[in-house]
Amino acid sequence: MTAIDQHAVNGLARELDPIALESWPARETEALDGWLLRFTDGFSSRANSVSALAYRGSSLERSIAAAEAAYRARGLTPQFQITPATDPPGLEDMLVRRGYTHRTPTLLMVADAAGVAGAVDVRVSSSVDAPFAALTREGSHSSADGDERLSILARIGHPKAYVTAHESGIAMACGASVAIGDWASVYVMRTTPSARRRGHGRRVLRGIADWALARGASRLYLQVDESNVAAQALYARAGFREAYRYLHYLAPAQTRQMPASGNNITL
Image (cartoon, rainbow, N blue to C red; front, top):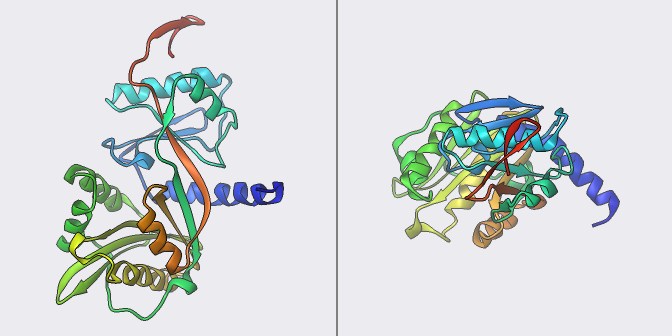
């Protein structure tokens, strides 16, 4: 990647990361040295990790240790989200030295809403109905994981849409969107297993794009695991392209306590 390309990537991340942060609210947050610690139920990485976008601390090691203590006090694994906009730039190297390992990379993809939109028969609602909730739980790692995502969606204060695609009166696929300024998200894309590869996901994306344009948002973004090749193919066919990648770093399972400057620092 050229220096000019990297500059553009960094700029987009600085623009989008705060929007993505605001549109996926954790149940509890805590400010720490310019970072935002997010705590929910431990399933969604974005709702259970440190958003490190503006560091104002004096000791990176002490700040990391304080964040670790806050997560462990809530029974959660300490976790940091690392993106091209992460501050300070040395945070990732420090986490690796402390034994952190990362999950599968996440791709952030973007598209022009006008290029995704199209006349389509879908149901768009401002509130969750039973079919949307059932599809969300069915397509999540567990029912509890699905419930956490539904609770996050319920907390969103910005304009939002819940979109479902039906066949013979039965909901086959769903997705959600949150509009902030010129950007609208694509969240919780789910298709019931028996109905996959029949165009229902594409219908949901078109419905989200139509809704976004009506709300004044001309650009779409979504996050998808690098390992989810099928979903990436769907999004690429709809007009999305990869903008940048980010990682979630998790603390090692076992840590030990060492005194440093009179404080107990978790290493």
